[in-house]
Image (cartoon, rainbow, N blue to C red; front, side, top):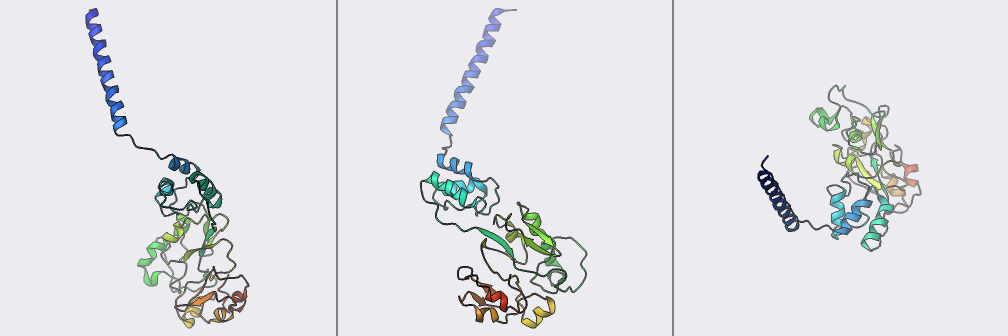
Length: 263
């Protein structure tokens, strides 16, 4: 074998390797992305569920927003107060007060307490029911359809359909909001974990129509409003709502409600 040829091949390979190495090194310096150390640290303490409940595109989006001063340190609903405190320490600020929230289904219309207009046989997806007569078989057009789109959307197994109506496990709920986004009837809302009372009905029909459709529907009789000592109850569109910031948890509204629509 010609030693000169071997040496030439070795030199050529070495030169090519050196050139590629220099090129990659220069490119790495030129196109280097600056890493925000606080952002990386915040991402490290966030739970990593990427549920979007904070309003950002996953945990990395929230970490960038907090590091950039665009979001509060306690913005993660899944991590709650504990994670908020860790993020606050990284940012060198106070976490502030945070109130744990949970999802609440504003309906009790299960199979025994609500009527149906017809038998439905088709795709069991609540969102598809918008294309069938009256938005679903239940007589109450504002009630839970019971086909579990919210169950499928929940990443924490915190909501289940029980006897035809969705029920939230408040201990498992992380208030990510995915069930709220997927419900076509807008039945699910967030309330404080320590809320004492809430109206479990979304009907906007007048009293007689609600009574005909459901045994536990709000009939807007106003007894809850008239008897509330904290002025926490309002009636609008034939529907009662409790202001959780005003509610003192006395239970008068629940006692006075003739339809047991308040839980």
